[in-house]
Structures are given as structure tokens and as C-alpha cells.
Amino acid sequence: MINRIPTNNRLLADVRHLIDAARRRVAGAVNAELTQLYWQIGNRVNVELLQGQRAEYGKQVIVELAKQLTTESGKGWSGRQLRYCLRIAEVFTDVKILHTLCSELSWSHLRQIIQVDDPLKRDFYLEICRLERWNVRQLQERINSLLYERTAISKKSEDTIRQDLDLLRDQGQLSPDLTFRDPYVLDFLGLSDSYSEKDLESAILAELQRLIIELGSDFAFMARQKRITIDRRDYYIDLLFYHRRLKCLVAIDLLCGRPHKSSYVALIVMWRSARNHHPDWM
Image (cartoon, rainbow, N blue to C red; front, side, top):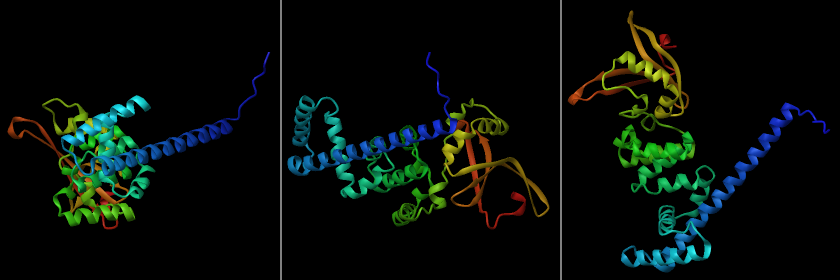
């Protein structure tokens, strides 16, 4: 009979951590190598075969190359995959930039983002995806829900957008225009066509984690129906949040209505610097 040696719980946890960390490093290294391989293939195909041609000749070249690669190297080299290779080489002309991104974003992330045509919009998704650490599904949901178009930054000039994105990338400085959105998408609440503001508030609190995902990962929930006193009058904030990166309080007022015979939800967002906030807000 074999006697089992008792295992120290801390030792077991440490070993598991070492194994998981090694697996993440290996996965990251494989991802970086594959992504750079796809860039190199796309760059070589474009320079040596297509020479900038993307019309009928280009399509024929891609189809024929895909057939040859599939025969010699197996599945995974379809015409669609080669077009992704061409696209990533076209978007990231400097492979050093791509190498930096590979440490934080997978090929699956990049494959979604490179399909965005507008350069500023594409950079927005790159930086916010890195900041909030979206998985691939969350990234696709944000793109499909037109997150960029719903942020305040999209209404600004190109110079302002570029400046805010550069500050976020280079200094980690997040501007309010990159944070707040209009409108917010709350389909995940599953509310019927007719509901009250109280129903809406209850549904939000029941799905608070998903609401924070929609708002942004730096939001922290503080209180509901928070009473504040201004000029000796009492007001009640439906939902009060704190934004860690902006260091500000965010008050949300919930409104329900029926414009054009369809129900809608408005989140009226008011924010105030935590350094100058009203004392009764805390």
C-alpha cells in the first residue's frame, strides 16, 4: 500500500502559480512569433508579388498562393488568412510597433482591430482595449456597438483625438472625453418594453458587474439613492460611482421615456473632481 505524502497548501498554490505563469509566457511568446510571421508574410507578398496591386490580379495571386501553402503546410493558410496577413502589414508599417502590441494583445485581438478602416478609430480601440484588458469577445461587442462613435472624443477634432490617444499611450493619462459615452447600451438588462425608473435601477444593481463593463473598468460603485444637500435642499443621486483613473465622482441619473413610441433609457452623467467635490457626496 502506497502512503500519500501530505501536501503543503502554500507549496501547492506556489507550484500552480509557477505552472500558470510559465504557460502564459509560452502562450505570449507563441502569439508574438505568429503575429510577426503573419506580418512578414503579408509584407513579402505585397512587395514581391502584388507590388501594390489589389485588383483582379491580386485576387488571383492570393488564391493560387493559398492553394500551394495549404498543400505544403496544411490548413490555416486560406485566402482569407493571407488577406489578414496583407492587412496587418498594411496597417502596421513599422514592425517594432507591432512587436510592442504583441505583449498585450493577441493575434485574435489584432485581427478584429485591423478590420477597422478609420486610423483614429482603430487607434482608439487599440489603446482602450489595452487599458481595459478586454477579451476578444468584449472587443467585438464594443466595435459592434459603435463604442467609438458613442464616446465624447469622437465629436472632437482629429488633432484633439490624436493628442488624447497619444497621452493615453505614452503617459497613461486618460481624458474624460475617452471615458464617457452617449448613449450607453443596456440591452443586457433584459427589461420589457414598459418599466419604471425604479425597475431600471433594480435591474442595474442586479447586473452591476455587466454595467461596469459597459461603463469602463475603472468605475467603482459607491452608493444608490445617495442623498446630497445643496443650498439646504436635499437631492438624491440614483447611482454614485468613483472613477479611479480620473480621480472623480460620477453621478448617474436614470431617466425613462417613450420618444417615437419606443422605450429608451438615458444615463445623465455628472462628474466632479474628487479634490473639489461637495462634502456631502461622500
